[in-house]
Length: 484
Ligand code: NAP
Image (cartoon, rainbow, N blue to C red; front, side):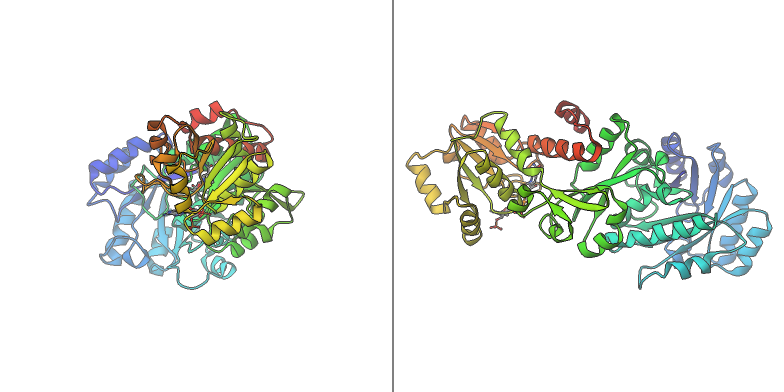
């Protein structure tokens, strides 16, 4: 079930939130601590859906600052008016809990962990179990992705007991717990009525939970995929892979797993996943956790795709063919000269694959020592910045020019890694895809060069990933349509 939290703060806001999210909500939670002096009757009459009355005190992370007896009165009034559930904190006065229970109300017994210290889930669960509770609710802030495991453990303990339970890891690191709750037997999840209307950090809009993640369809059998990196705010993967699974009629979901400590993630969360995409900063460090990587990924020294096959983890790199297929849509690289700016993960992938396909590679990089090291490793030429400018003055040209640095990426959209003078008559490819039209590409276009956008590489590498995850190759035009 999706429970939409209604936060106001004005009465008009609250009514608007109910109306706007009604089609996505199974239930509404009225945050009576956040809505200013609500005429309860009117608010409750605004929907025919079941209502949870919550009046969270400040000592448990809410906004209610009056006395406990005033709080108890508000909750009673809501119960009298027909609230299906009343949310009451485990740490609330025992008398209040008994009285609400005595009224015959169904109680959601909640506990909000303040994030200090580790959670002992088995102990916590035993402490929360109560004959008064219809539903147990645990919420805490995830400091890293591995912390989502607590929520899954809590739900599994409750499932064994046939106890209804909700467990949520708040914040961006905890996002998967809001989507995958049904996989672990959770009773419900909380969602916001829309962007910017969250009652708690990390709440996902109800429309997104229902339409993008289709969270109501998730079961123990649903395959879980996702992207692993940090940060992940800019990642477009969820918006592409989830609609593709829907189109391909696959019982699978794709989430963001924001990971600081890769070691803890691999131990505590990765076993739940069937496969995952890897992005900055983990493309190199993931390798030591894998059972096998293919020769291309090995030579590049970076993995962007991990698959679980018969319990073993297998890594590959779809960036390399993704970039080269995008360039070769315009020009075959065999026998052509290619200047690549950069010496990081993308540069390694592109240089390796281009060399395999027969291009003559020239590398340049801001930090000369790193660039020279890579050039030696791949047995290609290195060109310093001074040499590059001199060559440009002399009219030296490259058939293909590639930006594999992060220069030009949002928010530094007016920066370009290469001088305009060398762009003439070349095919210019920019791996940066955010924004799709970079300063380098604008300069290249103005200089009469042909351009290839980073989004083409993005689609190609994602299509190869999706094929590995789902066993079907999506059309690039479908992907383009989805992301547009
Ligand atoms: P990375 O490993 O961190 O490497 C970054 C590279 O950029 C290094 O060569 C670095 O040079 C250079 N650089 C950073 N800031 C610079 C500056 N201010 N001036 C000059 N050079 C600078 O990153 P990556 O994984 O290779 O990614 C590079 C870019 O490719 C990113 O924008 C990423 O989004 C994009 N990418 C796109 C796709 C796609 O599907 N289109 C896939 C993968 C990556 P130093 O060695 O001097 O630090």
